[in-house]
Image (cartoon, rainbow, N blue to C red; front, side, top):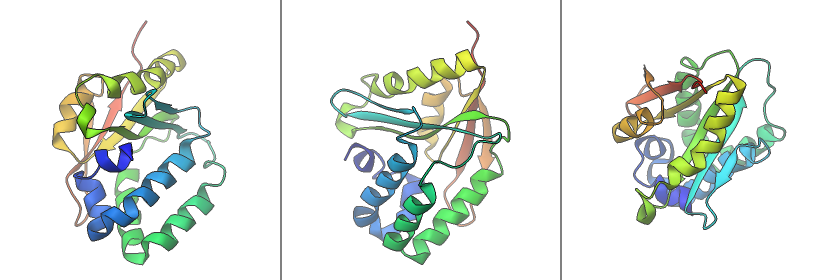
Length: 180
């Protein structure tokens, strides 16, 4: 519920799910969670008001176990039109993705009634600190211009525009490992 409420007005999710948001958003959020839950990168607040879903990517890392089946289920639920938009979005983002290993923040969500309490930063911090220790970049994409300032304040200062045909303006953000 936190994720679907947080992304209700998100330009990327609106593009991907269109008029079927109420029906597909829980399915989409579930698929994103299911592909990341075993990655040691899902962090939530004790009251579930905020969640960060990270995964290690790049290098020779194989896809998450079972992810093919998870996305097959989402495709069946969403239909070919939504699947085509998701595929188009992912192809555009892939252009900006590094090939070296990095931590990817696929979802950062806070319940709308709990914004500006530091919850998003709290659920991001464990993986940011781990990435710093491991010497790995952290990356994400956003289609919400207001998010750029938030992420910049957390070290995501390398920004690349992503061009999604018929989609919203989107940015790939990178945070280099921070020193001790």
